[in-house]
Amino acid sequence: MRLVYAEEMQALDRYTIEEMGIPGEILMENAGRGIAELIWSRLAPKAQKGTLIVCGPGNNGGDGFVIARHLAQKNIPVKVITLVPPEKYKGEAALNLQILKRIGLPLIELTESDLDSLPFLLKHFGLIVDAIFGTGLKRPVSGFLARVVEILNSSDVFILAVDMPSGLSADTGHPLGLAVKADLTATMALPKVGQVIYPGRQYVGELCVVDISMPPQVIAEKGPKRLWLTEDWALKHIGPREPDTHKGTYGHLLIIAGSPGKTGAAILAAKGALRAGAGLVTLASTRSTNLVFENSLIEAMTTPIGEETAEGCLSLEAFEALSNIAEGKRAAVVGPGVGLTASTMSLVQRLVAELPLPMVVDADALTALSGQFYHLRRAQYPRVLTPHPGELARLLQSPKETIQKDRLLAARTAARETNTVVVLKGAATVIASPDGREAVNSTGNPGMASGGMGDVLAGIIGAFLAQGRDPFEAACLGVYIHGAAGDLLAAEKGPWGFLASELAEKVPVVFKKLVFKRTL
Image (cartoon, rainbow, N blue to C red; front, side, top):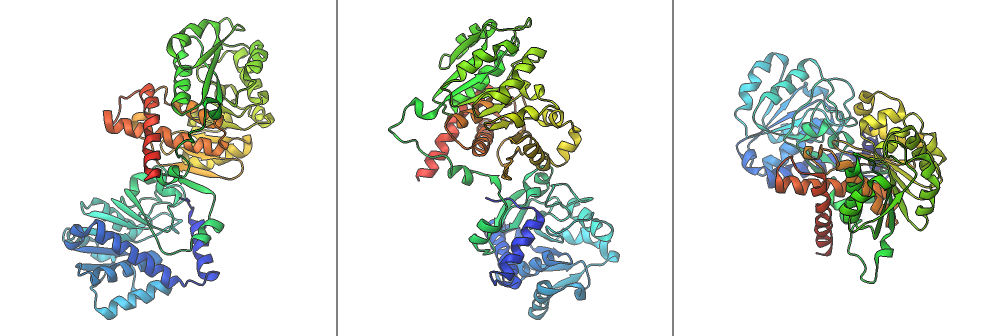
């Protein structure tokens, strides 16, 4: 499913109205009716206790008026609060307000002097519909309307938000001053970026997308190339394997990783790659660590390299040997636990710039590129970077706070400046490609905040590269499946305390689930 910013959604609405000839009144009617049907199917017991619809001054309020009419037709007891005088409503909103007046539906014009009575009024309802502000809000909520939001949040009544929780930025997911904390958000046509990234996710509650009959070709042709990685998306990209295939069909992945004290990172990357279906995996590291790998990875091949630093890490002199080993491989992963000696970092910089394979660049390799991403721009083959926020901050020489303030913007900027696919890890991992494609992941949980999880992810993405996937698609699939495996573990073992090695074991279970659903 596509993800949109507020201006992109507004442009799609305009195109639908002006070029496709579908009046705005019909879009508003479809939106209100769709949300009313959602309430009827999902929240009927709460709604039957009484539904209060709180309507703001714009089209979001107009949606609320349509919802009220359709709920009333289902004999649900409903009242409508307006937060501005009736004459302030314009266009489709004014039209639907007049309809409510004609059918005699109860309307309450709330003023600042009435605010003290609002908490007591809310107690008489089983459902509150927040139709105050939609996606177009740009300035902070203040004054009278801010107080209304505070009172709604202090209530223990179930809140359904119309399109956006009022006060939440549709673009950044940050509250504009303050925002409604909804239990469920019914958004129109397409999910908004601010609804699926943090902190927005914490305000949205459950997210449902309501069909407003926007023609599919409008979204396909005029919508942004930004994806929300959900199970529906994954089902289109993961299917059964053809029976007449062999290990060579699924690629040979080279992993350059590991050093004394960091052998676990290399092993976890290899396990991630094997569980994600790479046909063959070769782990290349130092002679001093090879025995650990031989005893831990019976399904992978290992290649010991003699050119080591005094600390037991791969040295710059290992480049020729690694270049020879890379022949016949389809992709590479460089970095997990490889070490940070000066010679090792020089080796990594050269590998990134010159190794003629699609490559995942992770962990220590990212640190070696801090402030020196020109090595990435020299590369003739695709590179996929998998930084956490601190690593991306070092790479771009930018404050970590700036990275976290707008994670999608940070990933987009890094992809453009480094000419790579960037996977910015964290809560709601985001992916950006230099060709303008972007994605936000829907899977994963806080229990995955432990050592080794990123190494498994690097191996999974590497496996998809080795299978011949487009680098952006490989990154998106790797991120989604990695998070889905973590979600399976959280459901099975508990919210945290599970291990990265256990997550790798769940990757085939995710494939099983997807293939089974696809073949139904």
